[in-house]
Length: 176
Image (cartoon, rainbow, N blue to C red; front, side, top):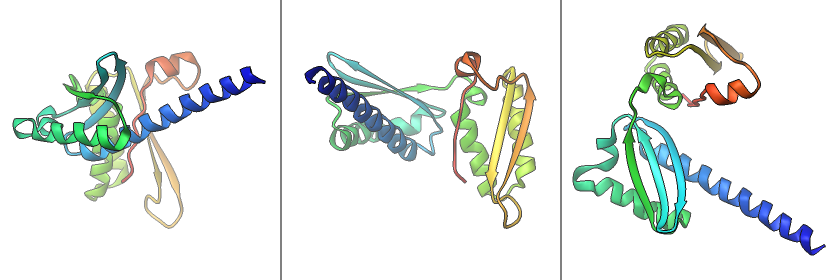
């Protein structure tokens, strides 16, 4: 009985920690949207929590004299209860190969009024020119009429399932 409760507490603690990480990712994605949010890596260290933010334009995340990153650090510490967070910003070496950045760019193109086929094909072309082996772009929702549709644009070699998919395919998600 006591062993089962300990396992349940540990499972619950893991779930709570993962929820907190996802909330932090959503918050930072919203705050650094203009800088081209590309991903997040959270590591616990003896000194505190190291948060590595990957962005297309790190200068916008850091701000003038580091003001924006100090405000982000204080907000992360206050809202998400991370002890002594140290936010580092890394620049994306090739933005065309970052799935999250490309999803955001596709979303922005659709919001600007581009036709969904033009936006989808140009995104696939840009990703393939960036050096990807394959690419699959899915746009779903009310595309032209009242009914929900899904449009897929693909090029190159794509893994649909299994361990190779988890290892080699990257996912990006954005709402337009």
